[in-house]
Length: 290
Image (cartoon, rainbow, N blue to C red):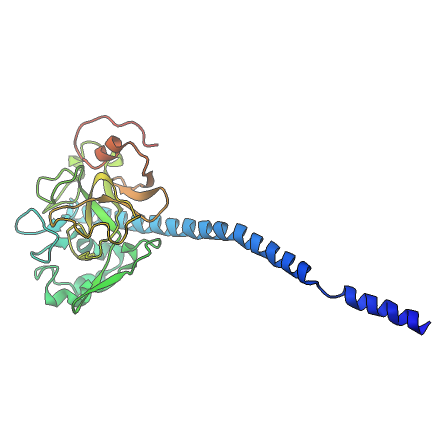
């Protein structure tokens, strides 16, 4: 009896353990489940980042609207004695983002910025290095600052629309934010709901930062910039070239229109339709944005 009992106990004891094959099967199943869940988790995170980015754009749009309500015109895209604006640290180059700081809960930063001294003045070095969270898309994979010698430069992934085609930033642009501009809503003849005010942009390696009214914070609707060669894609860009909008969101970028609405525009949009959205008064008919 005792021998049979011991044999049964021995068999039960052996059944309680995992074999190597069973362990490998369990690991394989867990690996498959993780592989299936990971893209869903990443998609959920990107969806959250996209919502946060859209909120940033909405806040900036509201800031521009509050500025317009106070001053009766939109802020200049960039202030300077003459044009065209070069993507160089030379000139006053105060961008629209500086002008709306009091309207996006950055009054202290605005008070510590000497507008008369210019964007690149030593007096503004500390303020220039500040990162304004509202100016940064959460999906941007790069750093929010860069260092140029001893100067720390805060970046921006949002730009105002200065023109509907590739052209230097100057006083004769047909967008809403350009050199010494002071556009009133009555001058947006194509309608505020059909004219882009702001859009996402991809900062260059040598971006002059959020204070600078250069291509760092101004772009046009000549097309979408791609991210496949980032961050080297604009390394050889000329000083007068501006470039188009772009983002690290899949399939398009987020834009704020002059009526305050914020929309996602696909990179597959008709290029001619996209171009027309950058012109405040071309008088051309637009079909509905799809």
